[in-house]
Image 1 (cartoon, helix red, strand yellow):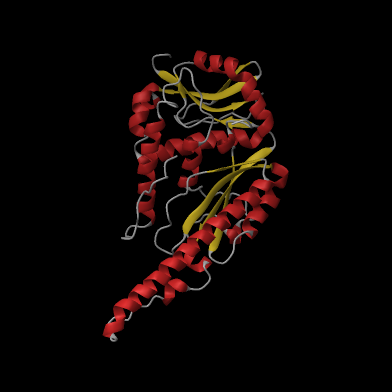
Image 2: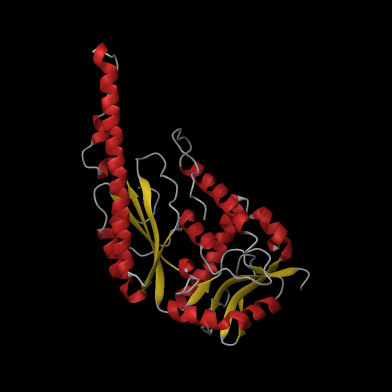
Length: 262
Length: 81
């Protein structure tokens, strides 16, 4: 087995809910199982080393289709486990050569994991993304006012007029950006106040095509499960003209896997 | 928005059956999750690999969403996980 399989780690848990993993198959179609050491367990699967060994993964994860398949399969296990009990998601592509390595890990960092699991218990992660259109936020419709006379009818003034309008446009745009930044700071601070912990992910790419919106906030929030509805409602209510709020989740606590002291 | 993600208008619905957005998932599985050292082949050494993969996947996802957008600024600074 050691020659042919490697161990994929999905999550760290405490005592497993009975039956939770029955019939649950992982990234390689394998039956997912748990190894336990000192009351802390790792949800793992034995997967084909030819597909999920280091070399193979380096190649396959560089393929968008395969990365997506692995990410979704990994997430499926993590989500199933985290929906039933406190779980620390493992980062994608955490691979051990054998079970001994996983047991050593649990023995070594068991106390830390137990502390993080207590902290995560009865909590979930919600994502909040805010897309802002600075030109709308500025409130003056300034972008639309820049309407350069195409034929230069007033020849003498056209260049000056252009420059003036261009400057006004840029100023308005700058104001819009500042407004967007301020708004995202405010929303983040408000949401962080409702959360146990908060962190920021890098902004995702601008939306293609349909509008001028930019992502000005890509936040993750660890929320008491009992307050999840309240949190989501507050997030939605923070949207306004020119700023669209999107709530995602609940997620397993991927963004808070390092515990309270990170 | 037409891409099926939850918006202000529909946020009361909780995580429907529909597939979650890949970019949101990648934010989390690539940048989040506990990083475990030890007898690991990939999770530490693979950080660079993962960033490269993320760029690749985002470009491909975007290509699928918007086949022709000449003003597309592409991947920008700060997009790394």
